[in-house]
Length: 184
Image 1: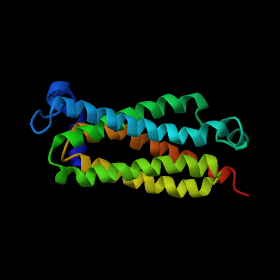
Image 2: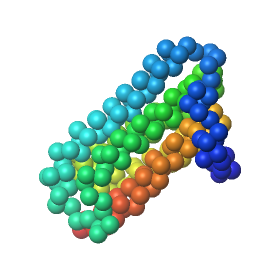
Image 3: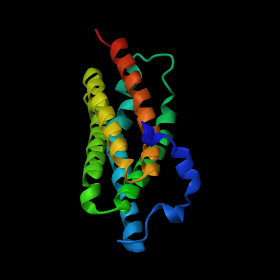
């Protein structure tokens, strides 16, 4: 947790030009890599939307919800922002050093991205609210592990993942409430 202290100081002290080291990779490679990470993250969100969107006005409308459930329109902008921050975080780690040193953090990142995508299909497509809750707990653990593994490479990358962890924490509580309200 100590590594997270100073996130805001890190962000204040660095401008964009000093975040990514120049040595090792060309500027073209770095910008191309950022584009790849954006495509991966936003693509995962898009694939999740294939499961989610048809069910918003269908099955999900019939699900009993707690009074504090956000309106449906909130989820799109929040997730889009989070996917962009996730992509930038992964890119910062990728840009930070040797491939051997960044392999584990980026594998963890990939695994949590797959789990993120899987949740949408389990919850919205399969209508398995209980299974989705257990899956989101696993996702939460992988996000936390990803953040922890990002911090030695880039404090800013770890900080960029914190809103995602906070949102998934909220989503986990919401998922649990939906499960309780809709269990026979």
